[in-house]
Amino acid sequence: MKQRWFEQDTWNEEIEDFFFLKISRSQKELASQYIRVQAIKFLSMPNEKLNNVAHRLIQILFDSYPERYMDIMFCHEALADFYYSKEEYENSFSHYETIRNYNSSSQNARYCTITSELGMLKCLLKIKHSSKKQLVKELINEMLPYLNNNFQFFDNIRKDFITVCRQINQLLKDDEIENIIKFIEGK
Image (cartoon, rainbow, N blue to C red; front, side):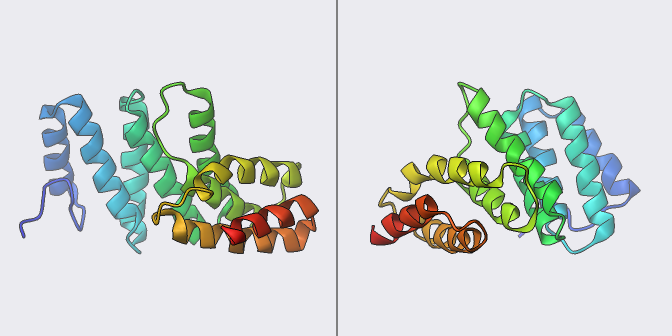
């Protein structure tokens, strides 16, 4: 299969010049998608040089296409995952929180945050947070409507959620959280 111009496996000056030439000729909504796809690909690769290119591309996306919320939110999620894998939990939490805040403040939010909320819970296991217990309860309550749903899609998320909540509750020892875990397990 032929490689698409916006899904390169490497990066150099020639590729960059060609990439931005194509971006400049693309429709705005497509240009932001092309940048997102390339950035997320590089961010997922175990190569520091390409990770740096990804960060630069994401910054260009944020600066040049602020109205392209979906592309921006996907990049925040990729950054959160990237920082989590690097054990930079505060940075990871910050990007997950950006997604959550966007969705709670926007009437037009269409980005499902359940994976971001689960990511925030995982980060809370690793970081100190001034109101950890309260935030954990808020996140759990926000996730419950999805987890109570019987769609098969949520089965793995439900299992991950229960595991994370059990780990958090070992730290917090909260009866309300324990009751929610038991309720979800009973589903």
